[in-house]
Image (cartoon, rainbow, N blue to C red; front, side, top):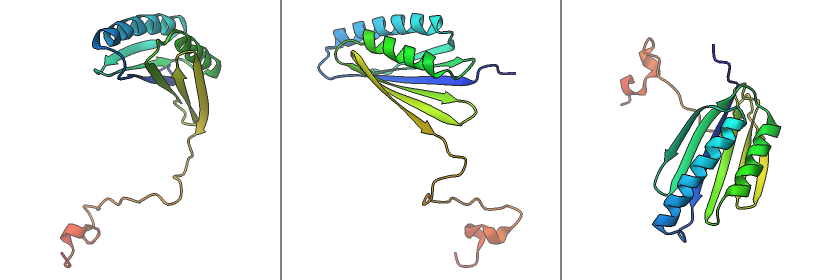
Length: 144
């Protein structure tokens, strides 16, 4: 049984002002420092994915503790070099809420976003044809 109740996703992007060498150096240091930070915070299943002009990571925690995510945001913002910005998405697996953090060198912002049980009004509804009821399948109706 999965004991991890919360997931953290991150996306860091690099300004065009960084040279290729500076980008590689920043990415290497950022990966090393963030990995150590996450391990100290109790993260498990760390997965870092460099994507050229971005760096992503994903990890899990046993509990959804906002104070832990705030500490992670604060510490990452403190170590971000000029020309690098990031976003964190912290998702509680019970789907009651998610927290989004925006990070820049020396600063961060956050917002809690509830995840409603019912979809918002006005969303397009997609229907699935029932194979046991051909009249529900537009491809099998006489008008086509």
